[in-house]
Amino acid sequence: MKPQIITTDGGEELVVLPRREYDALLARLGDEKAEDRMSARLVAQMRARIASGAERLIVAGPDGRPSRPEALVGEVVKAARDARRLSQKALADALSITQGYLSDLERGRKNASPELRRRIGKRLRVKL
Image (cartoon, rainbow, N blue to C red):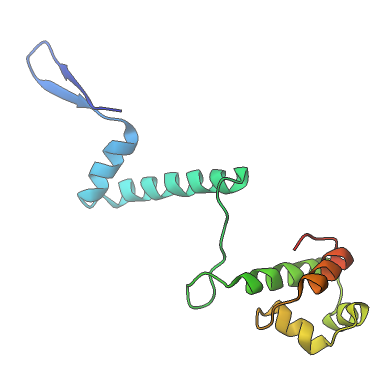
């Protein structure tokens, strides 16, 4: 939206801006509250896009870089296993793999074959 310029009866020109543009201007001038409002607005917009499926949330690792795809699979496996109160040993036994291998999968150190991912997904009732 373009700013509107309104002239008062006394001849003074007033500029009407959308709040977003006004906050951006104040933030550039160092107003922290305006910057906080802008940040909150951006976070809310991105959360809405993630919730709608228009964006995908990528989890960052401890170094701040995006996690590798196998790490994302491992996080889902661990969360689903924990939600079902299964130990690593119990799940590993059910899948006929070692507990150490399952641990490596959950930590993103190893990548599961498509067949193993299918079996894990079926056992935990999740889509990998």
